[in-house]
Image (cartoon, rainbow, N blue to C red; front, top):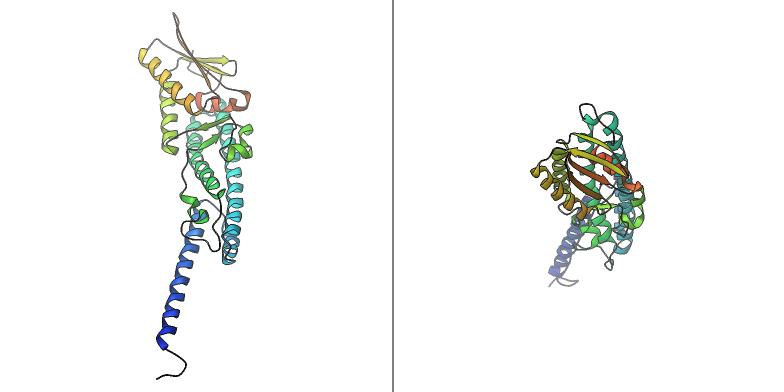
Length: 269
């Protein structure tokens, strides 16, 4: 008999420790991969890893929430800047608007992902070490309908976290739905015969066309469902159809970015 006890017990303990270490490493790797997916900078990832090594999930969740919220704030501000840029381009270089609108759509998807992550990270933290199912590890996989700020007023903390500001667009379907909606609007707007300034927006003129009237009504109803700060008015008279789009001052750039300038462009009557 060997002195000092059974050798197999020590072997079992070593295997158990190795498996535990492997599981911890996998959780840490998933945590950092999710944070990177959310756009957290490499320098901040290193600090997050150090917090994780401390073994306190609550501290990890608090730090990650801080980093994601900061990124959400910056992304929301950049989104508003792009909307303003698209509005300016409508007057000077309308041929470049579509490219900026594409960037708005992509960033809108990022904002939605960050909003979902912030919401998940606002929940209760696990006790002790982070696990595979804790909010820190699963934040990047959270899903929500984006609440896209339509003006600087909507950049408050409440709007960023899905709160109660009204000057936001909420669109189910994410970036694909946003891209499809813009494409549909551009198709029908391209059939307008002219445009004039309106109180708070722009009025587009169209020839009599029942198909266009139906499409304008359909798109207006869909748009109002997600962006309730818009007001749409369709008037049909002897001289044709008039479609007016208006919004509060805080969201005036959204009208211009999507529907064009409130002045007659070259080639329009």
